[in-house]
Amino acid sequence: MGATAEPAISVSRLTKRFGDFDAVKGVSFEVGVGEVFGFLGPNGAGKSTTINMLCTLLKPTSGHARVAGHDVVTERDDVRRNIGLVFQDPTLDGYLTAEQNLKLHAELYGVPGNLVRPRMEQVLRMVGLLDRRDGQVMTFSGGMRRRLEIARGLMHSPRVLFLDEPTIGLDPQTRRSIWTYIRELQEREEITIFMTTHYMDEAEWCDRIAIMDQGEIVALDTPETLKAGVGADRVTLQTDDDAAAIEALRDRFGLEAKIVEGAVTFGVPGGEQFVPRLFAELAVPIRSVSVSRPTLDDVFMSFTGSTIRDAEEDPSKHRNRVMMQMMGGGRR
Image (cartoon, rainbow, N blue to C red; front, side, top):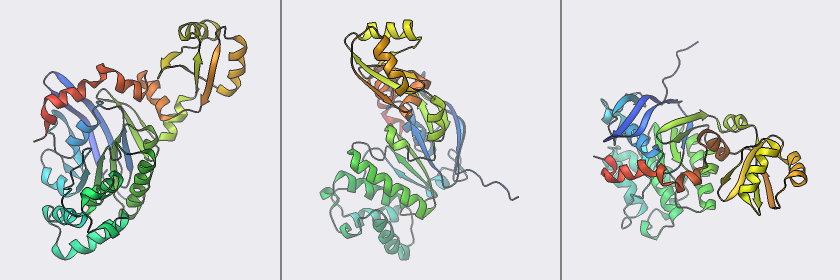
């Protein structure tokens, strides 16, 4: 058997501290070559801080990380030559055309002059924007701009493409379209994709995901394995008295329920078979009930005790983001 290929990304006990606050708390993981790897978690969980360290925009407080075979601290230039990066915030020049934005990027990365035009046509065709190559970017829709930013990140043929919240602010249909492009690009280019997101449906596109909460990785596996590990179906109730319903579920059925996103929620095996018992034996009027198979949101809730949406609405979980703003993002 041949030697095992070095991972595209290798992270060991990586931390980032701002003052007395640990934004990232000793995370460790590996990403295989050609894998689509997702970081899933609420805003402020430490996802962007981690991606900034891997892209050499932030220096780790401790720990080690290698990207495309190079150390992110001692071989920063080598790392940067081998990665593409699509930032969470737009960075295109709206006054330039799509082609001019790509040419500028190619010059910054030292793409040989004779390769710029064919590569530019190739990436524009990949993202369906070849016919808009001469269009001024300020006239593009949000989805078109995002696709152009992805094309720009591919101009210098990186080995690893980092996507930080690649579809944030886009409508669901456009987000799905962007992900179709991303998957097609990954197959054509044979590159590794590392992306962050707080959209649960988006994480389903990944080969594996790491769920991050408050600076720590709380779970890491394929979406299917993580969902299978939850086991129970999610039952959601609207009742006339939620507090009484939670108490009755505990006393009558031995179930621990809680208010999640404004509704009484609990997990139970065979949810559809349990619903008739619920109507017959729960001594609280039920206005509506729904049953759903385990989702990644259920996985997140099983590890953290809340959903992504509730975590984002909890001010105590925003300290990471607040600290980043106070430190000016930590970028140099």
